Each structure stands twice: as C-alpha cells, then as structure tokens.
Image (tube, rainbow, N blue to C red; front, side, top):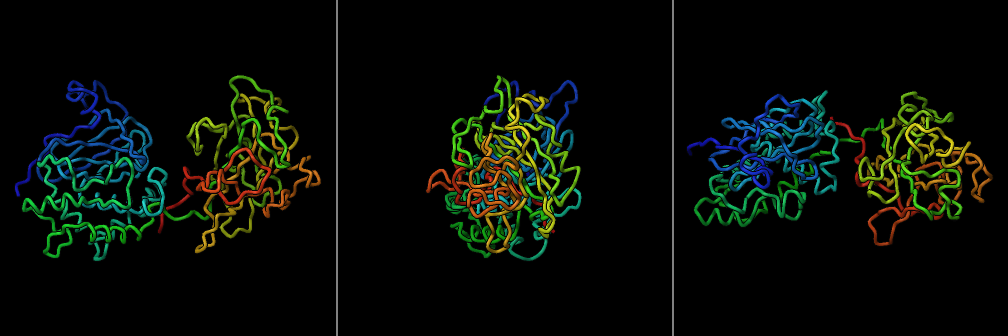
Length: 488
C-alpha cells in the first residue's frame, strides 16, 4: 500500500474553541518560551486531519502553546512545569493511538513518544491493569513505573517482553494487525481502537478496546480483520479481551512497595460539635483565638522516646516550630473533600523493614497565621499528641503486610485521645503511655486507629468528628498512592 504523509496535527482545543486565526498562528512565538516538550512519530498509513492531544492521568486535556508536525514527526510544547503519567494521543480514522509519558519536567524534553503499535500495546496493558486493580493512573509514581536513574520498572519489563515469544508479544502482534486495518482516510465516527464509552471516563473493564461493530463493518466491506493471525476473520473481541486481561495481570504499573519508607497521613476535623475521646462535645476555641485569615497548620518533631533519631525527619515535620506547615482543605495534597472543615497533610517517613526500630513522633495542630508563635494558635499549651508509626492495616492476607499508610484521623482540641500529658479521658490516669488503650478499642491510642463508617453500606469513607467510639476498619486514603519503587 502506498504510504501517505500526514497533512497536519491540530489540538482538539484549537478545533473547538480557538478559531482559525489561533489555528494558523499555533506554534509561532516571537521569542523562545520555556516549555516541557514531548516529541515522537505518528507513523501510520494515509493522511487525514489529525487530532492530537496530551491528557493527564485523569483524562483532562493539557493545553499546549505550540504543536508542530514535519513529515511523520510531531513536537508538542506544554507550559513549563512538572507533568507525571500523561498520555500523548492522536485520532486517525478508525484509531485513537496512545503512548505513555511517565514524566516530563520544566524546560525538559521527552523524545521517542511514538504513536505506534508498541506504544499503543503498552498503554492498553497499563490501562487494563489499573482497571482490574483499582489503581489510578494519576496516582502512579512515575519513577516506580520507569526509574530514570536505573532504568528499572514496569515499562522496562513490558518492552523487553515485546521482543521475546510469549503472551505479551502475541498481544503486540494483535495490535499491529488491527492498526494496519485502521484506515485513517475513512473519517469514520465509530473508531475501532477507542475505549468505550469514552477515554476520559477511564478504562471500562467490561468494554473492549476493539469495537465489535467496527470488526463487523470491516468484514462487510471486504477488509476483514484477522487480528489473531490464524487466517480467519475475527468478528468478536473475545480473543483480544482474554489475552489483554491475561497480559495485564503480568505487570505492576504501580511498582513494588518501598519497605524502607511509609506514608504518614494526618487529618484533623475542625468543625464545631465534634466529640472527644471521652465522648464530650469540644469547644475548638477553648485555647485558640479565632481571627479572620487564620489557617490550619501541623507541627511535629521526632519524640525523645523514638528508636529512630534522624534530624532530617525532624526538619520534615517542622522541628517543633509552629505555624509553618500548612494543612489543606481544598481537595489537593491528599485532602479528599474541599471545604468540609477536615484538613490534611502527609509525610513520607523512613521505617525499619524489620519492624524492630520504631519511629515515634510528637505533634500538634495550630490554628494561626503563617509564622505566628504558639500563644493563641495551639490546641492546648504544654502538651502534645503522640503516635508510633506502625502500619496497622488493613492487612493483606497473602503478604501479611499493611496498606503502606499510617492514617490518623483527629479532632481539633481533643484532650482525651492521644494527648500525652494531662490527658482528660476519665478511663486513664492523666498520662498516656505508648501502649495505653484508653478507649478499649484493642489498639493503643498512640497508633493508627480504625475509623467509623459514615453508614453501614458506605464503602469506607470515615465518619468525621467522632473520637468517642471505636472504629470498624482501617482506612486507606483513596486519593493517595503508597510509596512504591521500581520493581526489579
């Protein structure tokens, strides 16, 4: 078949909202602009109006300020920033081809992002795996997927398996045969390589990446697709779906757990009417002065009783200096719901893989102004909260390990839970030890605690504002990934 060169690539944003003037001026800058660049080839047969995008891990299109094509090569320039686990994609006739870009940094370039069978197959494997495991592309650790220092990771394994006989290579051959039939001159509105119902909605495990309607249509016009390579036209997606599911299960796009570090998450409920560990209502302004413009801050330090004594950890936690480390209630940085009065902060701290050496931390919350001193901003003077960094669960029945998080839900000003001195819980003696189970929950108070469900049918959202009752399950934050490293 004669190979035609693409006549152009345009962004969807340019087609839908920027107008012809912007389209023709796209890529023409009077001066060099700092950019994060992605380049590669779009080497499929035929020529058609190409629609090219870069989408983030949530499927949201990123707006480039320049996009150029020369022959079969493209170059997209994004505003200079850090971009992680994005996809380059282009629509051509029956096809929406995609390739993963684990990371591109400010004023840096990633080359060789080719929209071909290898890039498409790798992307399908990752998308199918994430669908089956419940992980999110946006939360994957780019270095765990493709370590820039060592070259290790899931990408390395997938690409190596493309070149040896086996199921991964068989899947690649299927994709190659389908792409060869994806006529980019057709202008067909029903693509054959498009994740139903829509790519932006994420991979739907019940929907095949190959359209059955497209297979039947190709057969009807005498251009049937034998994607299995057995000499018989394939009119169902069963063989493709089965093999993709098998291959996807061979890899871990999320990487492998880092046994030397753990993600420590603190959340504090600042709403009026919360219940303390002694089941009494809390006055959040008993010790704290409220003024317009104040924010929630976290302050911590390595406790003197800690086996692990590391100045770097102390510096990370704020070194006992109040009103420096801001917490979040805007849906970012681990916060789950913007504006709900529950503030979040998290730290990646070291741990002893053997579990012998314990990291113990003292901490407190402050409601203050940036840089303000203790007076008028702290929960209560002269005392602190304490926690021993142990991953309590949920425990994996196969590995016997926890979820990679230590998640602590507190309520502001509570003096009856994990407060160390002058503890007001009537079940205690005023002093909290590291192994004291104040509330009879079966877990020492100075540990990760189980949380209560909002309702019996809820999948696991913690019920805020209540330190009175014992929780029913350990909580894994859904919008944070564990600390993973590249699998060897």
